[in-house]
Length: 455
Image (tube, rainbow, N blue to C red; front, side, top):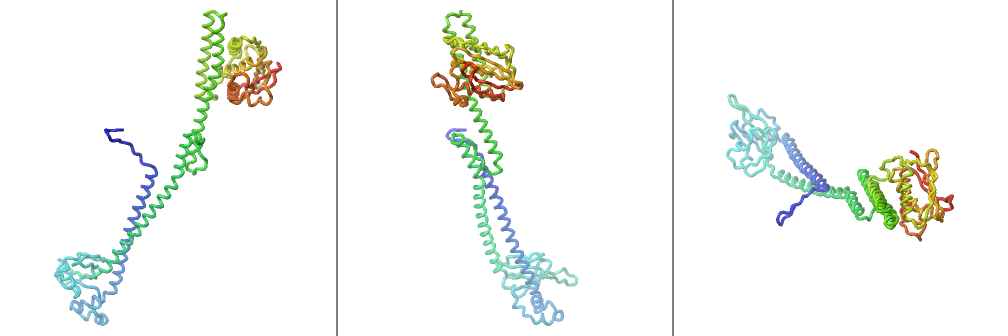
């Protein structure tokens, strides 16, 4: 839709874009979660290592407390008393319940903080990272002392972990780098896999375009199993479309062929000076009515196909009377004798329009090639009817007796014709599970024999 100079369009998300966006989003989510998990595990491992190391440093802490007089010497073993607390990198702080500093080891003085207890959480039963006076330390509560009548005091152990903190930061940066590299690689693989996975769909689109441009007839059969149902359904649809087009094309050819005889008969009626005005009008109206029925019939056959038309018993005499009367006018310069070798009440299990088309094509050929006689014979052979239309003309050469039922093939190249009539007869009779063939006539000419099942 256009608004002024701007154009608005509906942008439909492509299936490939959806799959790529979803897959890369999932990879990104898992990459971030994995990186966070790895960094968390690094920190936990670092804390666990600190806790294990702290257990081995507790005697040093006790020695610090003893040298400052907070623990009586008789409460410690001689081995602890002999330790030099200055060789330990752990610092100790004793805090009151209201966060005042009671005592600190000498190393704490390097922080230059008057009351360090205010910077340490009340509860630090597990190792915690803290930043004190610009230094990174890890703090943990060890034990407490409680004087009579006083609240419980708290003893904390601190350790400078600037170096370890920097190592963790470097490790975290390295982790994010490799996770990012993994994410980019996985995304590239997903893009490649998506491109490869969707290649059958792109190929399907190319083949459909080729079919639309008449460069290809049907889709190939070597698609993945997931697309087999789709391609087979498309092939069926394409085949049905081609059959529909063929039916329309044949129907138009058949209609033109059928109308030709009626128009010739109409011209013959107009040239007949022996007919009164009333008789002429009546005969022309009959021809126009037959042409209208023929047009309706051919359009219906093109729409639903020959097999979709209803079967019914159609009298044989009425269409023969109508056709011979018309052909007598069209071939008035060649008197033709029509011999009827069948019961006047006979009927065939063929649609009325089909019977008219069959008889019209066969009788017109007989009138055209006969010398003077045409014979129509109907025989009952139990489960089938056998209808034969014969003439005393030159006959059909043996080498043409099969090919003449193909569209456009004619045995006689001298007389005008389209090569459609016999092909139409073959198609019609085949739709009733019957057959038609050419043979020699008892009149020394051609015989066209139709075999029609009774039901």
